[in-house]
Amino acid sequence: MSGRVLAVCVSEEKGTCKIPVPAAVLRAGHGLEGDAHAGPWHRQVSLLAAEKIEDFRARGAEVAYGAFGENLVVEGLDLRALPVGSLLRCGTALLELTQLGKDCHADCAIRRQTGDCIMPREGVFARVLEGGTVRPGDALTVERRTAPRPWQAAVVTLSDKGSRGEREDRSGPAIAARLEVAGYEVIERLLLSDDPEPLKAQLRRLCDQRQPDLILTTGGTGFSPRDQAPEATLAVAERLAPGIAEAIRAASLSITKHAMLSRAVSVIRGRTLIVNLPGSPKACMESMDAFLDALPHAFELLRGEAGDCGG
View 1 (spheres, rainbow, N blue to C red):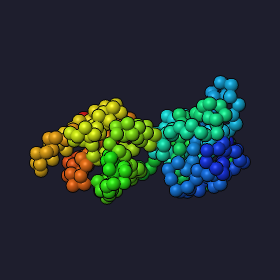
View 2 (tube, helix red, strand yellow):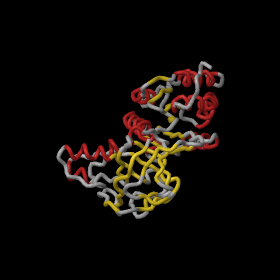
View 3 (cartoon, rainbow, N blue to C red):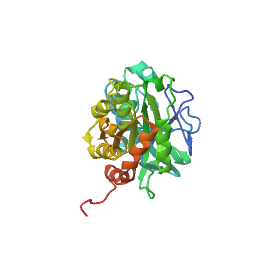
View 4 (cartoon, helix red, strand yellow):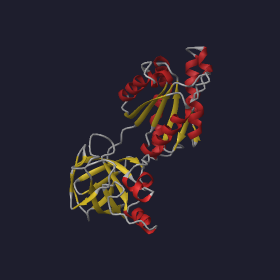
C-alpha cells in the first residue's frame, strides 16, 4: 500500500494552523524540525488524508493544507485503516504510527473558524524512527516489519486518596516495573479517582487511539460502594475474556480466602486486553504470576499474527 505526500506543513506554536513549506527534515526521535509538536513523545508527526480534507471542502469550507494542524497531507492511503505500529517509509525517513485520532480541543484555530475539526476523527500520529527530508510529491509506503514489535501496556491506578495526593501510589509503579522486566513497553501510567466515568473515558481513549496490547488497572475491585472498576471496565468492553480473572481468583484462593471477594473482570476492546488487578502491590504481583506468561499468545491472536490454534 502506498500514497503520495501532497503537502508538508509546520507551525511554531501549538493550537495554530500549520503553514505549507517546500520541504522539511524529519529527525529521528524528534519529528519535523521547526514544528511546535516535535519532541521526545509519541505524537511527533501528524498525518491527514487529502481525501478527508476534500470532503470537508465539499461542505463549503475553504481550508488550506495545514489548517487542521496536520504535518503531512497524504493522498491515496487510508491512514485511519492502518493499525498502531504500522511502518511508513518516505524516502530515507521511517515513521511508526503511534495513535489514531485524538481528543478534541474546542479552542483550536480551525474549530473557531469553521465550527468543526476533522483532525480528532481522521488524523493519525507517528514517531520518527529514521530521519530524512520529506517534500510534496514523495511516495509514502506501508513497509513490512522485519522484527517483532514489543508488547505495549498501560497501567491505571484507581485511588481517591492517591489522586488527591494523600497517598503514594505503590501498585502502579510496581506493575509497570514488572512489565518492563518482562519486555513490555509501558506507554502510559495514569492515576485516577475511583469515579467510574474517568476510567471509562481513559480506557476508551487508550484502546481506540493508542491500541496497547494490555491495560492493567489496579484498585476498585472490592465490595466498597466506591469500588466500581469492574463496572467501568465492562461498560467499555466489546468481548469478555473471563478466564484470566478466573485464573487470578483461583490462584489467589490458595493464598487467602478473601480472594473470593474480588469482583475483578478481564475483557477485550478492539485489539487490547484489559485486566483488573487488586489494590495492594503484593496482591498485584501474585495476580500477575497467575497469567502474565500466558499473554504473548493472546496478543499474537489480537494482533492477527498467530497461526492456527487447532494445529
